[in-house]
Amino acid sequence: MTANQLAKAISSNVRGAVVSHANGIDMPTIVVRADSLLDVCRYLRDEQAKNFLSAVSAVDFLGYGEDVSGYFGTERGRDLNATGSWGSPATVEVPATRFCVTYHLAHVDADGAPPDRVRLQVFVDDGEPVPSVVEIWPTADWHEREQYDLMGVVFSGHPNLKRLIMPSDWDGHPLRKDYPIGGEPVQFTDAV
Amino acid sequence: MSAGIDNDLDRPQAPVVPLGTPCRIPPGAPSNVVPPPGEDLITVNFGPNHPSTHGVLRLIVTLDGEVVVGLDADIGYVHTGFEKNFEQKTYWKGIPYAPRMDYLGFFANELAYVGAVEKLIGIQVPPRAQWLRTLFAELNRIHSHLIYLGTSGIELGAMSLFFYCTRERDTVLDLFEMVTGVRMHDRYPQFGGVAEDVPKGFYAECKRFCREMPKHIDSYLDLTAENPIWKGRLQGIGTIPAETAVAMGLTGPNLRASGVPYDLRRNDPYLAYDQLEFDVISAAEGDCYARYLCRTREMYESVRIIEQCLEGMPEGPVMADDRKYVLPPREELQTSMESLIHHFKLVTEGFRTPAGQVYCAVESPRGEFGCYLVADGSPKPWRVHFRAPSFVSLQATAMCSVNRYIADMIAVVGSLDGVMGEADR
Image 1 (spheres, rainbow over the protein chains, first blue to last red):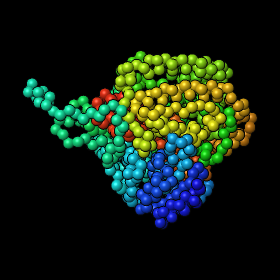
Image 2 (image 1 turned 135 degrees about the vertical axis):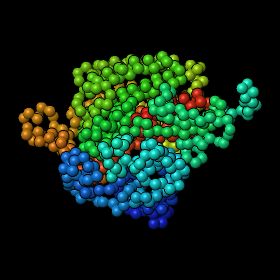
Image 3 (image 1 turned 180 degrees about the horizontal axis):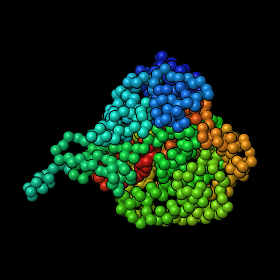
Image 4 (image 1 turned 120 degrees about the horizontal axis):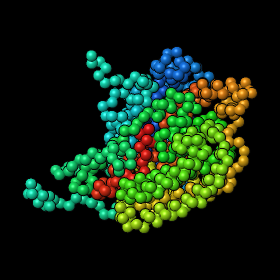
C-alpha cells in the first residue's frame, strides 16, 4: 500500500488525522496529529493488521538544518551546543516543532507474509504530551519510558512513566541536542 | 522464636500456577507486576551483579516464601550512550561502535547500521560481498547461540555444557580472526561491501568447521534435550502464547518458540537469504524449553547456510566501485592523486548523504535488530536509534516469572537471552 492510499484510508476513518504523507526511501511515512494518534493506531492495528510495534524513537530537531552539529573541526571547540562550520550542501526541510516521535509498525503473523512496514510520526513541541500507545501495543512500555528518559518527551497516559536507563535522580535528558557533552558535573567540585 | 515458625505453617499456600499456564500481560504497565498487599512479603534486590542474571540486570523481586509475586526489572547499568556517540561521528567512524552494543551478536549490529546508511545513500553492494556478509552473519548466530546455551546452562547448574560451548565458540572466533584480524567487533562490513576478501585457506577451515559443528550440536542435544533435570527446570516455565508474544514485541527465537515462524531472513529477505535454502525453526509450546530447543536447532540451519555460502559464493569484487563513499584501494594511494584526495576527504570529513530517514532491520541472533537513522545531509547522522531485541524481550521477564518459584525466574531470564549491552546501549 502506498503512502497516498494509506493516508486516504486513515483520513476516511479518523477525520483530520493525517498532516502529511510521503513514500519515503524504505516505507510509507504518515505524519498524524498528536490528539488523534490513538485513534489512528487503533485503526492501523485492527483494520490494517499492524499488530507489531517495532520501536518508538524520538528525534530532537533543535538546530536541524543550521549546518552540522558536533565538536570535531569546529572553531568553537568542544561546545556541542553550537553548530559546526562545515555547512550543509542541501537545504533541508526544518520541522516547525522541536520533537518528532516515530513509530515503526509491522505485520507479524505465522502466515509468512512480509512485515509490510509503516512509519507513523507525530511532531510535538517541548513539554507537549504525546498519548501513550501502551494500551494498543503493550511492548511500547519500555520504549516510551526510554524516550521519556533520554529525550524528555512526555507520554500522557503511560501507566508507569519514570526513568528507565538513567538513574532516577538524573538531571536532564542526555539525547537532547542541547545536552552538553563532556561537561558532566564532578562531585564535590565546589567544596573548597 | 520457635513460635514464629509454627505460625508460618498456618499461612495459606503461596499462589503457584501449574506448569504450562500461559502467562498474561499484567494490568497497568506490561513490564511490571505490582505485588499484592501482604504482610509476609519480602522484597529482594536481585542483581545488578549476580551470576544468574545473564548480565547486569537488576530485578526487584517481591517474594511470598519462595514464590515470586511481584517483579520489576531495572536496566541501564551498562548504558554508555551509543546513540549519542553516533551523532558525534562521521558515518565511517560509527561502524566500530555498532558491534559493541550486542557484543555476542556483533555482526548483526554492524549489518543493521551499515544497511541503514546504504539504503540512505543508495549504494549497490556487489553479490560476493552480500554472500560474505551472509556467511559471517550465520557464523555469528552460531557464536551467539553457543554463548546462550552455555551461560543459560550455568544458570541452571549445568557447568560442563559451558566448556563444550566455549570450545566451539573459539573455533568460530578463529574463523573471524582469520578474515577480519580480530576475534570480535570486527568492522568487517563497510558501506558498499566488506573490508576485504577472505584469505587463502579460509574455505578449507570453514568447511572443516561445517563438517564438525553438527556433531557438536548433536552432543549438546544428547546432554540436555532428554535430560530429566534440564527438562524439569525448563518445561512448562514461562509459557508465552503466540498473541502475547506479538503484543509484547518479541522477535527471533523467543517469538518462533511461541508458534509464530516469523523470521526476517524469510519474511523480508535481505543479503543473499532469498537464494539460500534453510528452515525456519519454530515450536508450539512457548516455554523455556521451546526457546532452548529453537536456538539449539537453529545452529543446524546456520551450518546449512554457511555450507551453501561456501558452495555458491559468487566471484567478483567485495566492494562497490563508488569513490564518493568507498575508500580507494590501498595500493592506488601511491600512484593516483585522485585516490589520495578521495581517501583524505573520506577519512577526515566523511561523505555527505541525502537528508532523510531510513529504518533497516536485520534478523540478529536475538530477533529484529533495527537501525532508525535520521540524516540532515551532513557527514554525521542527525539521530541514530537502535531497536534492540534484548531490550524488548526483557520486558517479558515479569509476566513470565510471576506466581512461580524464584528458581524458575532464573530459567526465564536465561531463556529470554537478553544481552545487557544491547538493552542499555
